[in-house]
Length: 126
Image (tube, rainbow, N blue to C red; front, side, top):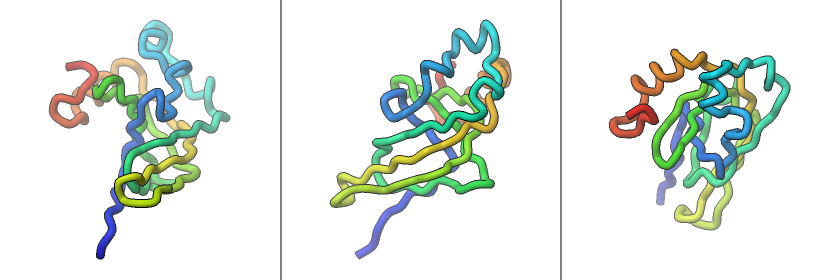
């Protein structure tokens, strides 16, 4: 019997899973770009990511992506500080953890990377 663990370089989460949408708001960011100084000391949590997954550990970065109704919006880079896999069976496994944002993309680059890096049909800027 084997097991399945997904390796991720992208923390792609919904608001419900822990994306800080109250802080990282696209309209506000386009009007006046949010800077790293505004959030540099904050630690964020995520939870409920389906299945067992392992994210790159510091000092390696992961991309931060907000999943908005199935559409991906790239925001910057994070380091994963902690991760936990829970579940009684492969069907009920979830991954949670903590992360720190280490880079926020300026709005122009944010749109470019989102258009370029998203899987087909997933870009927020379709």
